Image (cartoon, rainbow, N blue to C red; front, side, top):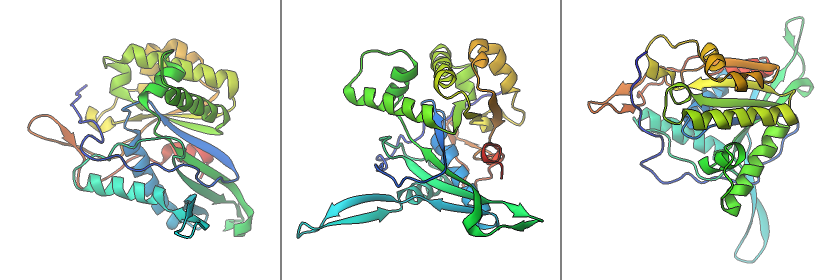
Length: 295
């Protein structure tokens, strides 16, 4: 199995502003969660762009970014509500950067995250039912929690700042209440990296939290960065079961494993670094979402 080095995401730019207090949406809530450096930003951005394009071409799907609404004061001290399309801007910025051979810039913060709503209409005799009778309304949230927050929530780290403790508690709360969770994993780090034992502890603790507080949730385990393994990726579900038997035993009953290729291919520089291709050809990036909500 060939594995090549890839540069970390977001090492050459300023942090992208993170919103707080996004609009709430009725319907089931789905959470994108990824261990640090798992490639979740790349996957999320490519998946969202692809999903929006599919929805725009469909008669039974509706895709909407959720605006970030906040209150501002004018020069006279009057308050007004302002809506900003930060999620749309974030996704577009990530895609534009990759189209120019750069990785998405590192996001900072987690409180509001980036969100969108996907609605699916049912059909009767092959005809979509009226728009007001959408049978599925799902909100999807992406939060970039600090790596230290993962260590506190699932790694057993005790010494931390109050901000990091708050981030860990926020993450745990979202996991306990999510109708579905997309867990993004770097396959190489999970099975061959130097952080394998550390990641094993975090994954086991996450699954135990789900078992104790949200055992009916759906869990999509998404193996990312598979472009780095050549044409034939191994059976990661089997490897996970063999390498992490205790974590596997705690998997929710509604769990499925997915292999995704957000870039389609990668480019390697003379010094061995990996950069995004200027033309993205994603494969299987929507399979986890299709399974999660059934469209």
